[in-house]
Image (tube, rainbow, N blue to C red; front, top):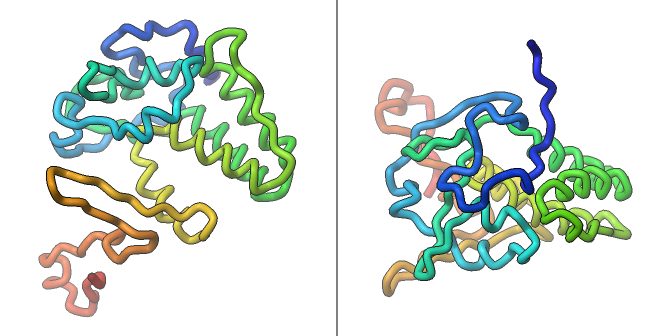
Length: 214
C-alpha cells in the first residue's frame, strides 16, 4: 500500500529517547545514507553552542535533536534512527517545505513563503506555544526561512551545499570559525578550500584535468 508522506508532529515523539526518529518515518520521501568519518560520531563530536542557543524553550527540535550532558551537547536525531558512522542523506518532507518557502520568498511571494514555513513550524513547537512567523518583505522572509532551515536540516548532508550557494549572496555569506585548543581555524565565504582537491590518481589518468586551486 502506498503511504502518503505527512509531517511528524514532534509533540508525539519522546524527547528523552536516545534515538527519537524511526527509519522510514512518515516524512521520508527518499531513503539514502552515506559513509562518513568516525569523527562525526555523536560520542566524539559536539554541537557548537552558537547553534544550540538558536532554539527557544518551546522549540521541540532542541530536546529531540540534541542531548545536553551539562558539559557538552551532542546530536542524537539521525532521521534513520541509527547510531553509527553513516550519515542520513535522503530527501525528507520538512526539506521540501523549506524549499517551497525559500522559493516563494525568492519570487517575492512572501505570504506563500510564510504559509509553508508556518505549516512546518507548527509541528515542531510545543502544542499551543508556536507564534507564527511574519514578514513584510523578501529580505525579512529569507532571513527567517534560512535560519529555520539551518536549525531543521542538521546532519542531512546539506549544510555544506547551502553554505556554498548562499556565499554567492553578500547578504547571506558566512565566515566560519572554530577554535581547537589554542588554534583558531577560519573559512571565509568563497574560500578556495570549499572545493576539495581532485585525487592525484584521477589527474594522473587524465592529465587534461587541472587540479583545483589552493
